[in-house]
Length: 382
Image (tube, rainbow, N blue to C red):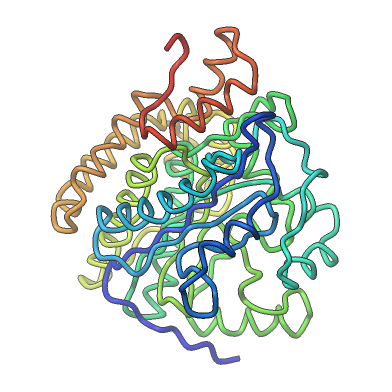
C-alpha cells in the first residue's frame, strides 16, 4: 500500500500532554472530560477546541500544541491551553496532574470516552485496553522526507532509556509500589502493537508492513501502531512516545528539547552522508528494561560486548554533546534543564521520597497537582 509522507519543515515541533482529572476531595481520578471539552469547545469550529481533546477514558484530557518552531513556543502553547482548562476544573471540584500512572485509583472504575473508536478498541482488546489507565507525553519533530523518518526513528532507539528514565513517573499502580520506575511502560507494552518499534530498512518496507498488518486485520489503520517511536505520515514527523507523563511544564520542555536536538543532529548527519548508528535489537530491549526498572540509577549497555555505563553519566555527556545543536535551535535553556531534572530527581524518585518520609499516596497526588500548578518540584520535608 502507498502511504504519503507529508514532509514537515526541519525540526518543527509538536507536543501532546495527557492530563489526569482528579477529584479534590478523594484524590481519585474522576470522569469529567466530556463536560470540560464541551465548554472549552464553545466558539470553536465544530464545537471542538483545537488543542484539547478526548483520550480513552473520561478521566483524561489531552492537550496538544500547534506546529511550533521552538521549544519555548511549544511550552507557551501548552501553558495557554492548560490555563483555560484549570480555570474550569478549579470551580468544579477537580484538579489536574500529569504522571505516568495515578498512584492508587483502580483501572476498573474508569468510564470510556464516548468516541466510538475507543469503544471499538475496548471491544477488541478487552482487559488489555480496560487497564490502560496510563498517561504519557508525545513529542513530534518534523523531518523533510519519508526515508529520513525511518532512518532517524531507527537510530533514536539508542536513546529510549535516557528519555524513559528522565520522564519515569509511575512507580505506583493501584496503591502498591511496583518496584519499577515506570510501570506505565509495562502496562502499555501488553498491547499487540505497542512497545519497541520494528527496525525497517526504508519507507517502502514501512508501507509494505503497514499493508500486511491491515490485510491480516492486525490493525484497521496505522493509528493503531503504538510503538515507542514511530514515523507519523500525516504530520510528517518522527514521534517519540516512550515518555511517562511529566508533572511540570519545565520537565516537558526539557524532554522536548532533548528529542528535538537528537532528531536535528541525526538529520544533519544524514545530510553529510553519515547514517546514524542503530544498536542491536537485544541491546535496545535490555536497555529499555533497565530504565523501566531502575530509572536514572540504571547502568546501560554501551557495546556488543555488554560493557556498562551509568545512565546518569551517559545522559550528562549527551546533553553536553547536543549543546551546539540546541544553540542552533534556540533551546539551550530548555536542554540545560535536563541537568536540573536529574539533580531534582525524576518524578518516580520524588514520589517515593514522600512516602519514605511518612506521607500517604493521597499526599503524593497533592504533590503532583502542586507541581503542575506551580512548576516547582515538591520534595519530602517541604
